[in-house]
Amino acid sequence: MKTAIVIGHYPKKQGAFSEYFGMSEFTFWSNLVAVSGLAKDYEIFTHEILSGYPARQRAMGAKTKDYDLVIELHFNASNGIGNGVEAVYNTKNERMKKLAVKFMESICENTGIKKRYPLGRDIMDSNQRGTGFLRYTKGDSIILEPFFGDNKSDCLKFEKLGAKGFKTIIDELVDYYCSWI
Ligand SMILES: [Zn+2]
Image (cartoon, rainbow, N blue to C red; front, side):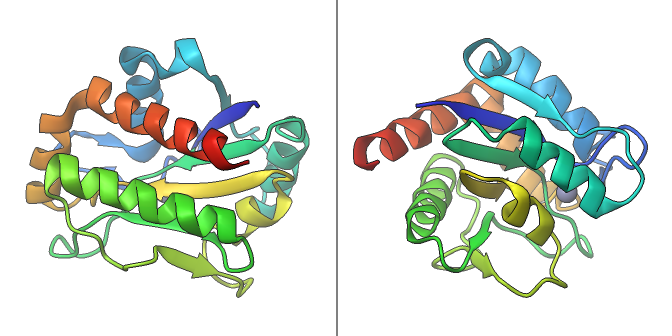
């Protein structure tokens, strides 16, 4: 059983910016995988510097084709008021629905960050963000967004959990996945 962890976005377009943490999604997760120990226990992937979202997702699909589980890390952002944990998966993938629920429950129990949707967010519509990643990855794939980077209360709660605490949640998530595949 092989798990790949993908840093969302890429150096040229780093995703949302968190005023609280003073960094973008790409920098935030690049740092966190290093300091948490995730990079020691899992294969970490970053997107190729290719123009066009579909091209980058196809390249990621090719790089991760031998992995059973592919997790992409993001944080959410909206208007400063929006808050909560989300996990995004393909509607047809019942295994990833289970994993989404487990992830949101773990984040909620360990930080107090609320679950935005009881079953995570399932997508099929090709216009929705994240669809390419879920479509081009061959194994089970899921997008994790534990908090809103532009919501101070979410950021404080995630900061309290810390990098090591987040790694524990990922380790438990992977163990849970292993227990039923
Ligand atoms: Zn993102």
